Amino acid sequence: MHRLSFTLVIAILGLHIVHAQGPDLIGYWHNWNDGNAPYLELSQVDPRYTVVEVSFAVPAVGSTYDMVFAPAETAPATFLADVAALQAQGRKVLISIGGANATVHLDSDAERDQFVSSMLAILDTYGFDGLDIDLEGASVAISGGTIANPVDARIIRLIDAVNTIADTFENTHGIPMMLTMAPETAYAQGGMSSFGGIWGAYLPLIDALRNRLDILQVQLYNSGSMYGIDGATYTQGTADFIVSQTEALLQGFSTAGGYFAPLPPEKVAIGLPACPLAAGGGYVPPAVLEQAVDYLHGFGPQPGSYQRVGTYPTLRGLMTWSINWDATANCSVPDEFAQAYQDLFGISTTVAEAPDSDLLLWPNPVEAGVLHLQGLQGDERLLLLDALGRTVHTERATGERTTLTVDLPAGTYLLRVERDGVLLASRRVAVVR
Image (tube, rainbow, N blue to C red; front, side, top):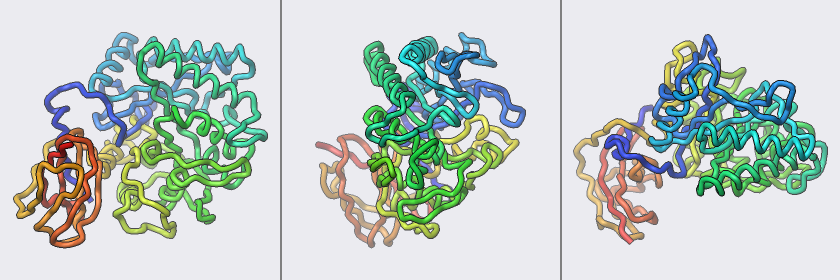
Protein backbone atom coordinates (compact mmCIF):
# COMPACT_ATOMS: atom_id res chain seq x y z
CA MET A 1 0.00 0.00 0.00
CA HIS A 2 1.48 3.33 -1.06
CA ARG A 3 0.70 6.60 0.67
CA LEU A 4 1.11 9.87 -1.19
CA SER A 5 2.81 12.55 0.87
CA PHE A 6 2.91 16.30 1.41
CA THR A 7 5.74 18.37 -0.04
CA LEU A 8 8.56 19.43 2.20
CA VAL A 9 8.21 23.03 1.07
CA ILE A 10 11.16 24.20 3.10
CA ALA A 11 13.47 21.62 1.53
CA ILE A 12 12.31 22.45 -1.99
CA LEU A 13 12.98 26.15 -1.43
CA GLY A 14 16.49 25.24 -0.34
CA LEU A 15 16.17 26.81 3.11
CA HIS A 16 18.10 25.42 6.04
CA ILE A 17 15.97 24.11 8.87
CA VAL A 18 16.53 23.13 12.46
CA HIS A 19 15.83 19.44 12.88
CA ALA A 20 12.80 18.91 15.12
CA GLN A 21 11.87 15.95 17.28
CA GLY A 22 10.73 13.25 14.94
CA PRO A 23 9.57 11.37 13.16
CA ASP A 24 13.03 10.21 12.18
CA LEU A 25 14.62 7.67 9.90
CA ILE A 26 17.83 6.58 11.60
CA GLY A 27 20.42 4.60 9.68
CA TYR A 28 23.89 3.25 10.39
CA TRP A 29 26.53 4.17 7.82
CA HIS A 30 29.43 1.75 7.26
CA ASN A 31 32.93 3.14 7.52
CA TRP A 32 34.23 0.25 5.43
CA ASN A 33 33.69 -1.36 2.06
CA ASP A 34 31.59 -4.53 1.88
CA GLY A 35 31.28 -6.31 -1.45
CA ASN A 36 27.58 -6.92 -0.91
CA ALA A 37 26.84 -3.54 0.68
CA PRO A 38 29.40 -1.20 -0.86
CA TYR A 39 30.87 1.89 0.72
CA LEU A 40 28.89 5.09 0.20
CA GLU A 41 30.07 8.63 0.50
CA LEU A 42 28.03 10.55 3.06
CA SER A 43 26.92 12.76 0.19
CA GLN A 44 25.25 9.68 -1.36
CA VAL A 45 23.03 8.91 1.66
CA ASP A 46 19.34 8.83 0.75
CA PRO A 47 17.80 12.21 1.70
CA ARG A 48 15.07 10.52 3.74
CA TYR A 49 17.60 9.53 6.42
CA THR A 50 17.30 12.25 9.06
CA VAL A 51 19.80 10.77 11.55
CA VAL A 52 23.00 9.23 10.17
CA GLU A 53 25.01 7.14 12.63
CA VAL A 54 28.62 6.74 11.55
CA SER A 55 29.88 3.26 12.41
CA PHE A 56 32.08 2.99 14.41
CA ALA A 57 34.45 4.60 16.87
CA VAL A 58 36.42 1.71 18.36
CA PRO A 59 39.20 1.27 20.94
CA ALA A 60 42.74 1.71 19.70
CA VAL A 61 44.71 -1.51 19.25
CA GLY A 62 45.67 -2.88 22.65
CA SER A 63 43.05 -0.77 24.45
CA THR A 64 39.43 -1.12 25.54
CA TYR A 65 38.88 2.57 26.33
CA ASP A 66 41.01 4.87 24.13
CA MET A 67 38.59 5.50 21.26
CA VAL A 68 39.65 6.25 17.69
CA PHE A 69 37.91 7.04 14.43
CA ALA A 70 39.00 8.04 10.93
CA PRO A 71 37.09 7.85 7.64
CA ALA A 72 38.34 4.74 5.86
CA GLU A 73 37.52 5.46 2.22
CA THR A 74 37.10 9.25 2.13
CA ALA A 75 39.63 12.06 2.43
CA PRO A 76 39.22 13.77 5.84
CA ALA A 77 38.50 17.16 4.29
CA THR A 78 35.77 15.68 2.09
CA PHE A 79 34.30 13.78 5.03
CA LEU A 80 34.18 16.97 7.13
CA ALA A 81 32.49 18.84 4.31
CA ASP A 82 29.95 16.04 3.85
CA VAL A 83 29.09 16.03 7.57
CA ALA A 84 28.56 19.80 7.44
CA ALA A 85 26.43 19.50 4.31
CA LEU A 86 24.11 16.95 5.92
CA GLN A 87 23.77 19.17 8.98
CA ALA A 88 22.97 22.17 6.80
CA GLN A 89 20.02 20.15 5.47
CA GLY A 90 18.68 19.78 9.02
CA ARG A 91 19.97 16.24 9.47
CA LYS A 92 21.94 14.91 12.43
CA VAL A 93 25.23 13.02 12.12
CA LEU A 94 26.30 10.98 15.14
CA ILE A 95 29.31 8.82 15.91
CA SER A 96 28.42 5.31 17.06
CA ILE A 97 30.69 3.51 19.50
CA GLY A 98 31.39 -0.18 19.58
CA GLY A 99 29.51 -2.42 17.21
CA ALA A 100 29.52 -6.19 17.21
CA ASN A 101 33.30 -6.60 16.98
CA ALA A 102 34.70 -4.05 19.45
CA THR A 103 34.94 -4.54 23.21
CA VAL A 104 34.74 -1.40 25.34
CA HIS A 105 35.58 -1.69 29.05
CA LEU A 106 36.29 1.09 31.54
CA ASP A 107 38.22 -0.74 34.25
CA SER A 108 39.50 2.25 36.19
CA ASP A 109 38.79 5.93 36.66
CA ALA A 110 41.85 6.68 34.52
CA GLU A 111 40.42 4.57 31.69
CA ARG A 112 37.06 6.33 32.06
CA ASP A 113 38.75 9.71 31.81
CA GLN A 114 40.70 8.69 28.69
CA PHE A 115 37.50 7.35 27.15
CA VAL A 116 35.88 10.75 27.77
CA SER A 117 38.85 12.67 26.39
CA SER A 118 39.13 10.54 23.26
CA MET A 119 35.39 10.70 22.50
CA LEU A 120 35.30 14.47 22.94
CA ALA A 121 38.22 14.74 20.53
CA ILE A 122 36.33 12.68 17.93
CA LEU A 123 33.17 14.76 18.37
CA ASP A 124 35.10 17.99 18.00
CA THR A 125 37.31 16.89 15.11
CA TYR A 126 34.46 15.83 12.86
CA GLY A 127 31.68 18.09 14.14
CA PHE A 128 29.36 15.25 15.07
CA ASP A 129 26.02 16.14 16.69
CA GLY A 130 26.28 13.45 19.32
CA LEU A 131 26.83 9.89 20.32
CA ASP A 132 25.21 6.51 19.69
CA ILE A 133 25.89 3.64 22.10
CA ASP A 134 25.99 0.33 20.25
CA LEU A 135 27.92 -1.84 22.70
CA GLU A 136 27.47 -5.56 22.22
CA GLY A 137 29.02 -8.85 23.27
CA ALA A 138 31.24 -8.61 26.35
CA SER A 139 31.12 -4.80 26.49
CA VAL A 140 28.02 -4.66 28.72
CA ALA A 141 27.14 -7.15 31.44
CA ILE A 142 25.72 -7.06 34.95
CA SER A 143 26.46 -9.22 37.97
CA GLY A 144 23.89 -7.88 40.45
CA GLY A 145 22.33 -4.74 41.78
CA THR A 146 19.16 -3.24 40.36
CA ILE A 147 18.13 -1.08 37.45
CA ALA A 148 18.08 1.99 39.68
CA ASN A 149 21.22 1.06 41.62
CA PRO A 150 23.79 -0.80 39.51
CA VAL A 151 26.79 -2.29 41.29
CA ASP A 152 29.07 -3.11 38.35
CA ALA A 153 31.93 -0.61 38.18
CA ARG A 154 32.09 -0.75 34.36
CA ILE A 155 28.41 0.23 34.07
CA ILE A 156 28.77 3.00 36.65
CA ARG A 157 31.86 4.40 34.92
CA LEU A 158 30.13 4.28 31.52
CA ILE A 159 27.17 6.25 32.89
CA ASP A 160 29.56 8.79 34.41
CA ALA A 161 31.50 9.02 31.16
CA VAL A 162 28.44 9.67 28.99
CA ASN A 163 27.19 12.32 31.42
CA THR A 164 30.58 14.04 31.35
CA ILE A 165 30.77 13.94 27.55
CA ALA A 166 27.25 15.36 27.24
CA ASP A 167 27.87 18.11 29.80
CA THR A 168 31.13 19.14 28.14
CA PHE A 169 29.54 19.09 24.68
CA GLU A 170 26.71 21.36 25.82
CA ASN A 171 29.06 23.75 27.62
CA THR A 172 31.25 23.96 24.51
CA HIS A 173 28.58 24.26 21.84
CA GLY A 174 25.66 25.76 23.72
CA ILE A 175 23.25 23.02 22.60
CA PRO A 176 22.49 19.55 23.98
CA MET A 177 24.35 16.56 22.62
CA MET A 178 22.14 14.08 20.81
CA LEU A 179 22.21 10.63 22.41
CA THR A 180 20.87 7.37 20.99
CA MET A 181 21.25 3.74 22.04
CA ALA A 182 20.83 0.50 20.09
CA PRO A 183 20.89 -2.50 22.43
CA GLU A 184 20.11 -5.99 21.25
CA THR A 185 16.83 -7.38 22.61
CA ALA A 186 18.49 -9.54 25.28
CA TYR A 187 20.07 -6.44 26.82
CA ALA A 188 16.74 -4.60 27.09
CA GLN A 189 13.45 -6.53 26.91
CA GLY A 190 15.45 -9.63 27.89
CA GLY A 191 15.32 -8.30 31.43
CA MET A 192 11.81 -9.72 31.65
CA SER A 193 13.17 -13.26 31.52
CA SER A 194 16.39 -12.78 33.53
CA PHE A 195 18.48 -10.06 35.09
CA GLY A 196 22.16 -10.92 34.92
CA GLY A 197 25.00 -11.24 32.42
CA ILE A 198 23.78 -9.67 29.17
CA TRP A 199 20.11 -10.09 30.15
CA GLY A 200 18.74 -6.67 30.99
CA ALA A 201 22.29 -5.29 31.06
CA TYR A 202 21.41 -2.04 29.23
CA LEU A 203 18.51 -1.23 31.55
CA PRO A 204 20.60 0.52 34.25
CA LEU A 205 22.33 2.54 31.50
CA ILE A 206 19.06 3.53 29.85
CA ASP A 207 17.44 4.36 33.16
CA ALA A 208 20.31 6.52 34.40
CA LEU A 209 20.49 8.44 31.12
CA ARG A 210 16.79 8.54 30.23
CA ASN A 211 16.56 12.33 30.64
CA ARG A 212 19.43 12.78 28.16
CA LEU A 213 18.36 10.01 25.83
CA ASP A 214 16.86 11.14 22.52
CA ILE A 215 16.13 7.79 20.89
CA LEU A 216 16.16 4.16 22.05
CA GLN A 217 16.28 1.92 18.98
CA VAL A 218 16.45 -1.69 20.13
CA GLN A 219 17.70 -4.08 17.46
CA LEU A 220 14.63 -6.21 16.72
CA TYR A 221 16.78 -8.64 14.76
CA ASN A 222 19.40 -11.34 15.36
CA SER A 223 17.23 -12.21 18.32
CA GLY A 224 15.80 -15.29 19.94
CA SER A 225 12.18 -15.39 21.02
CA MET A 226 11.34 -12.75 23.64
CA TYR A 227 8.65 -12.21 26.23
CA GLY A 228 6.04 -9.51 25.77
CA ILE A 229 4.42 -7.74 28.69
CA ASP A 230 1.48 -10.13 28.31
CA GLY A 231 3.72 -13.05 29.36
CA ALA A 232 3.66 -14.74 25.96
CA THR A 233 6.74 -15.20 23.78
CA TYR A 234 7.16 -13.79 20.29
CA THR A 235 9.48 -14.58 17.40
CA GLN A 236 11.50 -12.13 15.32
CA GLY A 237 10.47 -11.42 11.76
CA THR A 238 6.78 -10.94 12.60
CA ALA A 239 4.47 -8.00 13.23
CA ASP A 240 3.76 -9.46 16.68
CA PHE A 241 7.45 -9.25 17.57
CA ILE A 242 7.68 -5.62 16.49
CA VAL A 243 4.53 -4.60 18.36
CA SER A 244 5.18 -6.58 21.54
CA GLN A 245 8.81 -5.54 21.93
CA THR A 246 8.09 -1.90 21.12
CA GLU A 247 5.17 -1.69 23.52
CA ALA A 248 7.26 -3.19 26.33
CA LEU A 249 9.44 -0.07 26.18
CA LEU A 250 6.37 2.19 26.04
CA GLN A 251 4.52 0.54 28.92
CA GLY A 252 7.41 -0.52 31.14
CA PHE A 253 7.99 -3.96 32.63
CA SER A 254 9.10 -5.75 35.76
CA THR A 255 12.43 -7.50 36.15
CA ALA A 256 14.30 -9.25 38.94
CA GLY A 257 16.30 -6.02 39.13
CA GLY A 258 13.24 -3.84 39.64
CA TYR A 259 10.77 -2.03 37.45
CA PHE A 260 11.85 -0.51 34.14
CA ALA A 261 9.78 2.64 33.77
CA PRO A 262 8.27 3.35 30.35
CA LEU A 263 9.77 5.72 27.83
CA PRO A 264 7.63 8.26 25.93
CA PRO A 265 6.86 7.28 22.32
CA GLU A 266 8.90 10.25 21.08
CA LYS A 267 12.00 8.45 22.38
CA VAL A 268 11.35 5.02 20.85
CA ALA A 269 12.18 3.96 17.28
CA ILE A 270 11.69 0.54 15.69
CA GLY A 271 15.02 -1.03 14.68
CA LEU A 272 15.04 -3.53 11.79
CA PRO A 273 17.33 -4.82 9.03
CA ALA A 274 17.09 -2.94 5.75
CA CYS A 275 16.90 -6.16 3.73
CA PRO A 276 17.19 -9.94 4.24
CA LEU A 277 21.00 -10.18 4.03
CA ALA A 278 21.62 -7.25 6.40
CA ALA A 279 21.14 -9.46 9.48
CA GLY A 280 20.96 -13.11 10.46
CA GLY A 281 17.23 -12.81 11.10
CA GLY A 282 14.47 -10.34 11.83
CA TYR A 283 13.86 -8.85 8.40
CA VAL A 284 10.23 -8.11 7.57
CA PRO A 285 8.85 -6.97 4.21
CA PRO A 286 7.29 -3.50 4.04
CA ALA A 287 3.74 -4.89 4.21
CA VAL A 288 4.44 -6.54 7.59
CA LEU A 289 6.16 -3.42 8.89
CA GLU A 290 3.13 -1.41 7.81
CA GLN A 291 0.80 -3.71 9.76
CA ALA A 292 2.88 -3.32 12.91
CA VAL A 293 3.32 0.45 12.69
CA ASP A 294 -0.32 1.12 11.81
CA TYR A 295 -1.42 -0.97 14.80
CA LEU A 296 0.95 0.85 17.14
CA HIS A 297 -0.18 4.21 15.74
CA GLY A 298 -3.73 3.24 16.66
CA PHE A 299 -5.65 2.95 13.41
CA GLY A 300 -4.67 -0.42 11.97
CA PRO A 301 -6.18 -3.84 12.70
CA GLN A 302 -4.48 -6.26 15.08
CA PRO A 303 -1.95 -8.07 12.87
CA GLY A 304 -1.36 -11.13 15.04
CA SER A 305 -2.02 -12.62 18.46
CA TYR A 306 -0.49 -9.79 20.51
CA GLN A 307 -3.07 -7.25 21.66
CA ARG A 308 -1.67 -3.80 22.31
CA VAL A 309 -2.39 -1.93 25.54
CA GLY A 310 -2.24 1.63 24.18
CA THR A 311 -1.81 3.60 20.98
CA TYR A 312 1.27 5.64 20.06
CA PRO A 313 0.76 8.11 17.18
CA THR A 314 3.97 9.98 18.10
CA LEU A 315 6.41 7.08 17.77
CA ARG A 316 9.87 8.47 16.96
CA GLY A 317 10.30 6.52 13.72
CA LEU A 318 12.44 3.73 12.29
CA MET A 319 16.07 2.66 12.59
CA THR A 320 17.89 0.32 10.24
CA TRP A 321 21.07 -1.59 9.81
CA SER A 322 22.00 -0.15 7.49
CA ILE A 323 22.04 2.76 5.05
CA ASN A 324 24.52 0.84 2.89
CA TRP A 325 22.38 -2.28 2.81
CA ASP A 326 19.29 -0.21 2.00
CA ALA A 327 21.03 1.39 -0.97
CA THR A 328 22.30 -1.79 -2.61
CA ALA A 329 20.48 -3.85 -5.22
CA ASN A 330 22.32 -6.97 -3.98
CA CYS A 331 19.79 -7.68 -1.24
CA SER A 332 16.33 -6.30 -2.01
CA VAL A 333 14.73 -3.38 -3.82
CA PRO A 334 17.09 -0.39 -3.44
CA ASP A 335 15.90 2.13 -0.83
CA GLU A 336 13.08 -0.18 0.26
CA PHE A 337 13.42 0.76 3.93
CA ALA A 338 13.58 4.51 3.26
CA GLN A 339 10.48 4.21 1.10
CA ALA A 340 8.66 2.29 3.85
CA TYR A 341 9.49 5.10 6.28
CA GLN A 342 8.20 7.70 3.83
CA ASP A 343 4.99 5.76 3.31
CA LEU A 344 4.37 5.17 7.02
CA PHE A 345 5.40 8.48 8.53
CA GLY A 346 4.24 10.91 5.86
CA ILE A 347 7.59 12.42 4.91
CA SER A 348 8.36 13.29 1.31
CA THR A 349 10.44 15.58 -0.85
CA THR A 350 8.10 15.25 -3.82
CA VAL A 351 4.92 17.12 -4.68
CA ALA A 352 1.62 15.30 -4.18
CA GLU A 353 -1.47 16.93 -5.67
CA ALA A 354 -4.83 16.16 -4.07
CA PRO A 355 -7.78 15.48 -6.37
CA ASP A 356 -10.79 17.80 -6.37
CA SER A 357 -13.22 17.08 -3.56
CA ASP A 358 -16.44 18.35 -2.01
CA LEU A 359 -14.82 18.35 1.43
CA LEU A 360 -15.79 21.37 3.53
CA LEU A 361 -14.16 22.45 6.77
CA TRP A 362 -14.72 25.28 9.23
CA PRO A 363 -13.68 27.44 11.01
CA ASN A 364 -10.43 28.14 9.20
CA PRO A 365 -8.34 29.63 10.77
CA VAL A 366 -9.15 27.62 13.86
CA GLU A 367 -8.13 28.42 17.39
CA ALA A 368 -7.25 25.51 19.67
CA GLY A 369 -10.61 23.78 19.63
CA VAL A 370 -12.90 21.98 17.20
CA LEU A 371 -12.51 21.76 13.43
CA HIS A 372 -15.68 20.62 11.58
CA LEU A 373 -15.48 18.52 8.41
CA GLN A 374 -18.30 17.72 5.98
CA GLY A 375 -18.36 15.66 2.81
CA LEU A 376 -16.91 12.40 4.12
CA GLN A 377 -18.30 8.87 3.94
CA GLY A 378 -16.94 7.60 7.24
CA ASP A 379 -13.85 5.62 8.24
CA GLU A 380 -11.49 7.76 6.15
CA ARG A 381 -8.09 8.28 7.70
CA LEU A 382 -7.59 11.95 8.67
CA LEU A 383 -4.08 13.31 9.11
CA LEU A 384 -2.71 16.71 10.04
CA LEU A 385 0.84 17.36 8.79
CA ASP A 386 3.08 20.20 9.89
CA ALA A 387 5.26 22.39 7.65
CA LEU A 388 7.99 19.72 7.59
CA GLY A 389 5.57 17.06 6.35
CA ARG A 390 5.44 15.28 9.72
CA THR A 391 2.19 13.70 10.88
CA VAL A 392 1.20 15.44 14.11
CA HIS A 393 -2.33 14.08 14.49
CA THR A 394 -4.30 11.19 13.04
CA GLU A 395 -7.71 9.63 13.59
CA ARG A 396 -10.62 8.05 11.70
CA ALA A 397 -13.70 9.82 10.39
CA THR A 398 -16.89 8.69 12.14
CA GLY A 399 -19.38 9.65 9.46
CA GLU A 400 -20.34 12.15 6.76
CA ARG A 401 -19.73 14.93 9.28
CA THR A 402 -16.78 14.66 11.67
CA THR A 403 -15.06 16.93 14.15
CA LEU A 404 -11.35 17.07 14.92
CA THR A 405 -10.09 18.41 18.23
CA VAL A 406 -7.16 20.65 17.32
CA ASP A 407 -4.60 21.31 20.05
CA LEU A 408 -1.49 22.30 18.12
CA PRO A 409 0.92 25.24 18.10
CA ALA A 410 0.04 28.16 15.88
CA GLY A 411 0.99 27.61 12.26
CA THR A 412 -0.16 26.25 8.91
CA TYR A 413 -0.96 22.55 8.63
CA LEU A 414 -2.10 20.24 5.86
CA LEU A 415 -5.21 18.13 6.41
CA ARG A 416 -5.08 14.91 4.38
CA VAL A 417 -8.03 12.59 3.86
CA GLU A 418 -7.10 9.04 2.80
CA ARG A 419 -8.84 5.72 2.27
CA ASP A 420 -6.80 2.54 1.90
CA GLY A 421 -3.71 4.68 1.41
CA VAL A 422 -5.23 6.69 -1.45
CA LEU A 423 -5.33 10.48 -1.10
CA LEU A 424 -8.92 11.70 -1.44
CA ALA A 425 -8.59 15.33 -0.45
CA SER A 426 -6.27 17.84 1.18
CA ARG A 427 -6.86 21.26 2.68
CA ARG A 428 -4.67 23.86 4.33
CA VAL A 429 -5.60 24.56 7.94
CA ALA A 430 -4.37 27.63 9.81
CA VAL A 431 -4.13 27.36 13.60
CA VAL A 432 -4.09 30.59 15.57
CA ARG A 433 -3.72 31.28 19.27
